Each structure stands twice: as C-alpha cells, then as structure tokens.
Length: 345
Image (cartoon, rainbow, N blue to C red; front, side):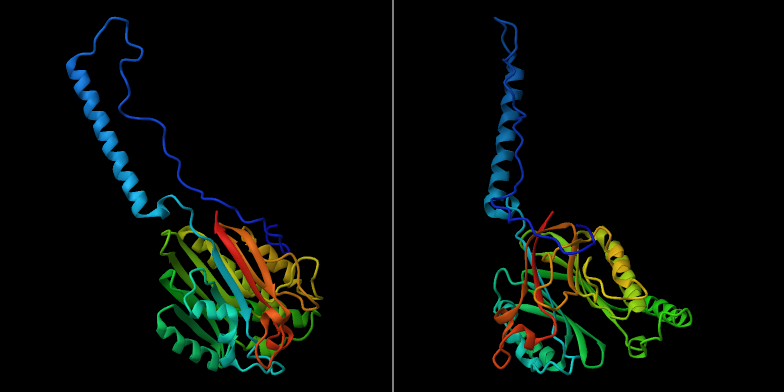
C-alpha cells in the first residue's frame, strides 16, 4: 500500500540474486556450417585460436575478480532501520536518558554487530547524546545529531558498515512559516485558536547520504520529528517529502521518524485533515512498517522508502523494550520503537 496505512511485509527472500553470465563465446567453431570437404585457411584458424585464447583469458580474469570479491555475485545484504522517540520532552516519562544505550538494539550498534541497524531517534536528551558520543570512540559507529530546540535532539547512529558521504541538518523554515500563516487563517475561519507552543517551536530534519561498504550501493536516509499541530504538521511533512523526492536522483531513499501522522483508518479529529493530507504527500514512498499499532497506543512513527522493498518489520513492545527500573515499553517511552528490515529493489 502506497502512502496509506501500514503494510504487511512479504517473507524474506532466500538465496543469492546475482549476475547472469552470457552463454555466448567470441571464439565460435567456424567449421560448423562449412561446405563438406572444404578446409579453413591457416590464417582463419590462427585468428580463431587467438580470439579463443583472449576470450578464455578474459573469463579467467573475471572469475578471479569474483573470487576476490564475492559481493560481485551476491545481492547487497538487507538494511535494518529503527525509528524511536525517547520522549525527553514528556515529563511523565522518567527513564534516565543516559540508560537508553543499554537497550539491546543500541548495544548491537555500540558493539559493532555486522547487521546492526541504522537508528533514527527523536527527543534525545543531552545525557543520552553525551554517553553515545563517548561510546562512539570505539569506532563501531558514528553519531549524527542536532538540537531541534534546547534539550531535544534528533539523532542518528550509523554503524561502521556504512560510509557517510555527506549530511545536513535543515530547519523547516518556509514550511513552518506557511503552517503559521494557515493556523492564523484557520483561527479566523472557525478551525480553533492556534497552538502557540507549537507555533514557536522550531523543527528540523537530518539528511545523510550513505554508501554500503560491502556492496558499494549508495542511498539516503532522512530522520525527523514533525509538529503534531495540524497546519504545521502538514507543511513540515510537505517540505520533508519534497526534499526526499529530490534526493531520489542519487539513489534509494529512506524516510524515518516521528511524523505525528496516523495510519489510514485511525485518524483523529482534525479540522485541517492533516493526517490524510500528509499521507497523500508520501506519494511513491512505501510504508515499510507493521500493519497496525500494538496495544492502545496509536503508532505515529514511520519508516518509508523508495528504492527498497520490505522484508520484515516489528514494534518493540512490552518486555522487548524494558530497562532496569522501567519494566516495559509503556514506562520506557511514550513511543514504541519500530524496526524494519529492507532490501534494495
């Protein structure tokens, strides 16, 4: 399903998807089809022999390259992506920010697991960010972070499997201004008064272009946390997906984060109809996530992609998102962590 609702992921693909070798040879047997009783000139035989020798040499060289680099034949390994809002902005959540790196999927990244996920986190507090920057000195991952506003950062953890080609942090400038104007207009047209705290709260997205060191494939990942207030939410996401579509020229693109947008069929009352309008902006970006929210909490976190296909997805709920002192997901954060495994399409 494109841009509307969550999708069920197909079963993982087994085996290797590789290149096919051509069955043709440049040194063909010219005697086939020759008139009976005729002989090939010596010069033709020498030419054919030289051609066959050159072809065999080329095949041996190609085989040697394949043996030296098995990825010449193998399809790129899947890419795991996790989006997680760690809720430093919610005073009801008491989880110490410095303890989040003890969660298992953080530890996979910290310890250099070969299939560690790219983590896109939102509402990250200074204590968590400082600890991760210290842990990153082991060389297993890179921290990319920006404070959208004081005390709350958007953060990405990039495992060492991926080379960072370039990155940028961008504030929703014109998008936020358009949302501001639309909110004032809605005030005068009966859509309710503006939510002033949101009107003056800046938001950002981070764009990172990566290269898979194993396969050489390049792709782009966006991480963001958009406003929950209808007119701002729509304009933030509109600007985000315009940037994502522009990045598609450089290869596959992943958009992850807290989009504050509900799946189809689970819309909340909103005079601006922002959920449906945001889903329309997703366009060609396919939802990689699970088919629906777990428990009573609506899932407003997304991983979408263009140029990838879904293999597996899950939400970390219950004890799967537990820390000492916070026995389950309901206590650790006001969001579940969403993990999606993608393959290059």
